[in-house]
Length: 350
Image 1 (cartoon, rainbow, N blue to C red):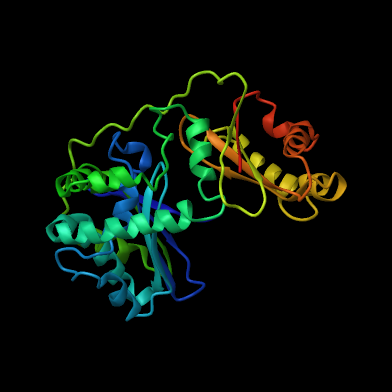
Image 2 (spheres, rainbow, N blue to C red; image 1 turned 90 degrees about the vertical axis):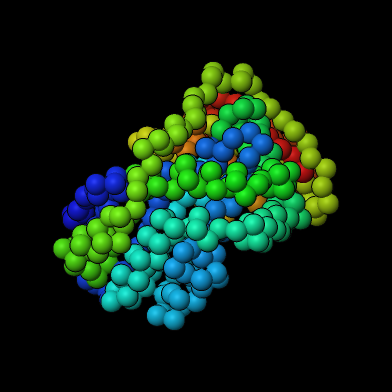
């Protein structure tokens, strides 16, 4: 059994510690309870924007020096990720350098706004806009994920818009808008710090208190939005998108149980059985037997409210009929366990 210790600082920071002396390495992860769901209309993309801004410097870390400082001591991995329900930042590094990572995380949690300038904002805004162009707008089938979200969740729902945000909202973001977003959400009482590896628990407790203990809590944390979904939309929703792609592709999404539900891990296993490789059931039927598709895939996007999503895709085989492909997927014995709830089945055809 894995031994995990937990404690909470007086400012509300939750800390999770696990000792593992199998290698001389340690991992630091700071997870903030803020994501794209918490963005206001007309201010989308802020959570992801901060995934970039957080690496641009703080009061005691010069601009663009976060990565070089860690690279100079042999960091193995350092990055951040953004989702609808959380944002996290992490470092994997030699365990004897652990306190450096703790200090860096504490410094940007407590003093980032002292270094945030209009120049930094403009620079990272352009970086995010270029990421949207390369990952979505100029990528074959790249907007499918965005289209599926808009179909699966109604307008006004916090999951209706993508984490990347919109070009218009990014352009409209003022320095004060961005500062307000950070001040509201990036507080110790809205974060969980996890430290794992070749560490001494007592030493970690002291170090965490030393670096993070003086950061003030936000006593007025905003409430998260209501993620409740109403009844199923009552049938399949379809949309056709014209794009310059080599072959038509059908993208599907099914509403699924929430993260933390015992059904969700079973559903993830089911997706692997159905479309987890060349020998999977859906691939065997669509690609080899009926020969209506070149490939097929299914995966789970877990969310904490409303509904998670099972997303899938199948690229049409040259000469095959798109309607027959869609019909084969829905009629297949392999997919019935996934869609048996009768919930909305959004579909996007390129």
